Amino acid sequence: MSQTLNRRQMLLASGAALLGAGALARTTQAAQKEITKTKKVLFFTKSSGFQHPAITRRDGKLGLCERVLSEIGKGLGFEVVPSKDGRLFEPDKIGEWDAFIFYTTGDLTTQGSQQEGPAHPMSADGKKAFLDAIAGGKGFVGMHSATDTFHSRGREIDPYIKMIGGEFISHGAQQVSNLVVTCDDFPGVKPFGKGLKLNDEWYSQKNLADDLHVIIAHDTRGMTGWQYDRPNFPETWARMHDKGRVFYTSMGHRDDVVENPLFQGLVMGALGWVTRGCDVDVSPNVSKVTPGYATLPTDNTPRKKR
Image (cartoon, rainbow, N blue to C red; front, side):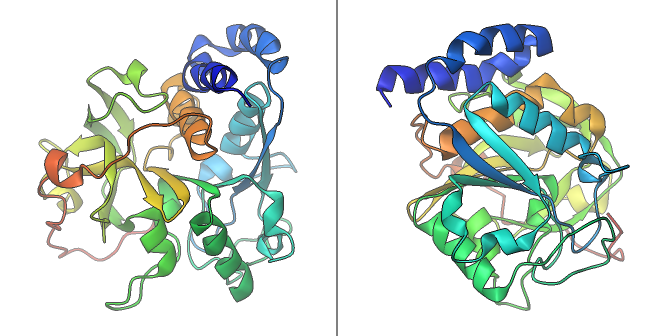
């Protein structure tokens, strides 16, 4: 694919979703003529822990986030395939995918309490094949509870956590947080301006990798809850995992956030980047823009359900 076409697709991926459904459809009709190869993306939404409303299926219909991303992706050169079937990560199937999106919880090699339809767990071989695929150059986009997945045990950090770059501690009540943009060059970020206030369920993270490129940070001043009694810390980031490109944002719990064009543009822009539709400098900046990121809150409160 030519550099011109890549640039065209990334402009669409980072901004067309902000136009609204009708304008997006009109804009992408012309763009589809230029797309030479559709990227196939597995949107994995299995919950081995708490199942979030945004990816809960009702009456046989896909969850809200599943519907939104699969529909927007169609016009931007992405075949987004929502699934809760961990068997798709087996070594003989993993090569089918160009990238992965995770909205998951818990140890995905276990069944968990989720009861809706076929939600088969990964095998140990499937987890290894997945991590090897990212290290080998596949793309990864994690949303919201993707860091509440494959928790570490004791001092040993789970290899999945090392890949995604952070691990969920807890969250407080849903609240408006002041988000500070620290990298407006990343696809889909410019519409955020210098920052904004957004109401969502915000994750406090630990085991944050030292090589994160922070895209958006939390300004913790005024946030309510012991989880945020800490210096500013990363909210959205990107990093390289060997040859693979990794992106994560903690946004996406609330339906109105999933339906927000800003969120949609951010995720689609990230998907474009992780599938190598554009190049962005993601050199580590976490120590510069959030110098107190490793300072954790004091947890004197029992862990809350999500």
